[in-house]
Amino acid sequence: MIRTLVVDDDALVRLGLTDLLDGDPGIEVVAQAADGLQAIERASAFRIDVALVDVRMPRMDGITATARLRALPQPPRVITLTTFDLDRYVYDALAAGADGFLLKDTDPAEILRAVHLVAAGSAMLHPAAARRVIDRYHATGRTAASAARARLDRLTPREREVLALLAEGRANADIGERLAMRESTVKAHVSRILTALGVSNRVQAALLARDAGLVG
View 1 (cartoon, rainbow, N blue to C red):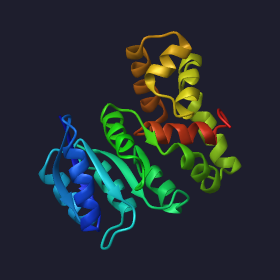
View 2: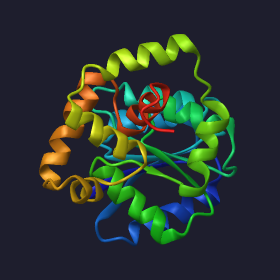
View 3: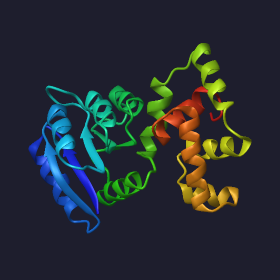
View 4: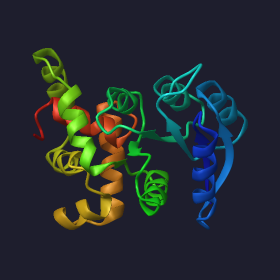
C-alpha cells in the first residue's frame, strides 16, 4: 500500500485528489495539508511514501516544502503539482528534490500511474512540459558544465549509457530492453549512478547529464 500526503491550499483540490487516490486499491491517503508548514508536520507525524505538493501556497510554498520534505530522516518522494506547464517554480521544485511534476489537469489515470511509478523509484514528468521547462530555465555556464562532466567521469561506460536513457525520461523496463539487460540490473545501475553523482533522484541525475552535454 502506497501511503500518500496531499498538499494544496485549495480545499476542493485536496478533496478531489483524495477521492481519486483513495479509489485506487494500492494507494491510501493518510494525511492532508493546506500549506508547506502543515506538510512538514504531517510528514513528520506519519510515514509517507509519496507527497503530492502544490507549488503556490501560503506560509510555505511547495518549493521550500519539497526541500524540507526531502531532508526528513525518512523522506517521502515528491510529485509537484502546478497549473502552468512553463512555471519557473516547476524547475525550482525539481532542483529541490521533487521526483517529477504533473499539471493539475492531467488525466486521473496518469496521476495514479505517476504515484505508482514514483513510489517504485522512477520519475514522472509531464511529457509535453518537461523539456520546455528545462530548456527555458536550466541555463548552463561553462563552469557548471565542466563540473558536471567531472562528476560523470566517475561513471563506467555502461552507467553512462544507462544515464543517457534515464535522462530521456525512459523507465527501467525500457532501458533494460534497449540495453539488453534485466530490469533488476538497470535498478542496480541507477542506484550506483545516483550515489556516484551525489544526487537524490533520477530527475537531478537527468539535469546533471544535460549540464554535462551527455544529452541534448
